[in-house]
Image (cartoon, rainbow, N blue to C red; front, side, top):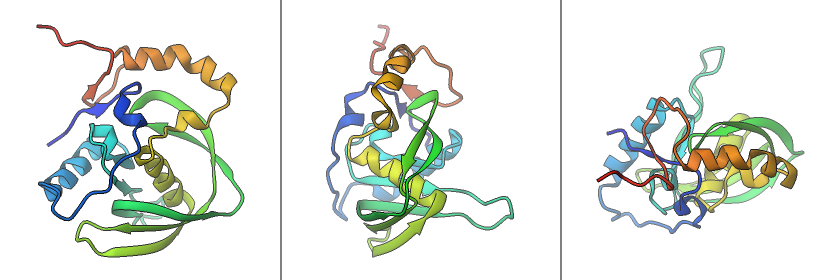
Amino acid sequence: MKLPIVAYGDPVLKKVCKDIEQTYPDLDQLISDMFETMYAASGVGLAAPQIGLPIRLFIVDTGTDEDGKEGFKRVLINAEIVEESGEEWAFNEGCLSIPDIREDVFRKPIILIKYYDELWNLHQERVSGMAARVIQHEYDHIEGKLFTDKLSLLRKRMLKSKLENISKGNVHTDYKMRFPKVTKKR
């Protein structure tokens, strides 16, 4: 089932999320719904807060590269970035919760991450390149941070009205969204 994606301005996007247990209700269905939602929105990652849940769960699928080589696909539960290394590099990032805004964000190219997969196997994995960037972006979500938090004050001021319009629902997307400053009509 495709779920609505929470838009910029919703308080859940600023919460540090809580770990979950193996007994979390309907976890398999939730993960399946998250993948369906992410693919329908043409995303490469989706964190639980983006669908309104303040839990430490996110998914990543970088797809295939230009050579047809399989990309990086993971379910990451209760993830913890243990280490970030290398020289920061800029990349123009976007976010399903912040449609129509893309900005250069600096991140380290290599991470060491510890997480549980969907079968509750514990992993510690060194990841680099684009997969590391996507993980860091989604990890920020479960830490209550958005890519816009990494921008300069001047850039944030320049985007303020666009961000306000997003929270009011004044943006077009090809996927279902939930806007924090839109009240339902009775």
